[in-house]
Length: 272
Image 1: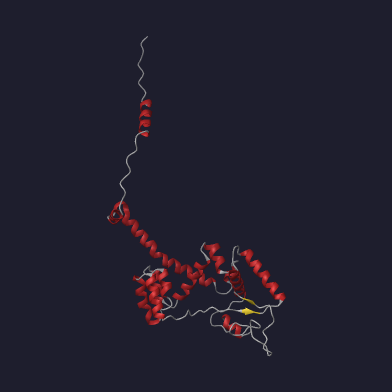
Image 2: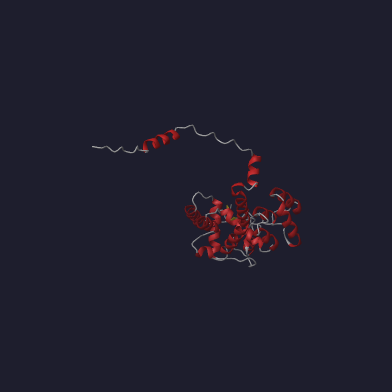
């Protein structure tokens, strides 16, 4: 009987080679790059870095346009009962739950959008990505009228810190036009119980909130039911004080004395 030799299998040598490669000493790590070498690599156009740089620059420039557009929408929602019709008591709730941004951020975006309506040069610069949002917020108080183009040009090239210093010098240490007012209101025991219950409900709706935040939410709820447009008679705290909306409170925000010189009934608490 004739025997036919079988071909040798190559599986075993292949496995041995793979095992040997796995146990081999790994190659030495590359030498660390110095910052100057990294900058040279990026600006030399290696590894499509120039295309990445252009893409990042475009994304950074569109940030301003997006914030202005979102701010316009947030400012529009603050009119009338639009927030209430969507099931939200205040702008902060809507921004947090629908957009995923914080309350202060949303309020700042809405305020900037309102301010830019009367500053077309600054608005165009922000939308075009020539002026950063933070720089625009800094120069808004002084970028008005004939001075607007000059401040826009400075906002294009100066840092925020330099702009803040320049704005303080231009305003000559002027006080903030929107001054805080301390409001004190006399409450009867029954009214006090209602306010306490409202604060408790606001606390359940706004977990971990503080008293000022709950009071603000209650005020937003009231304005949603009884909207007041700018320019209306009695708009704002001063106007409501003058119209007698808060009994026992004078135009200065303090309780008034009666004919005998005594204050209004006890139970007044600070509105802070």
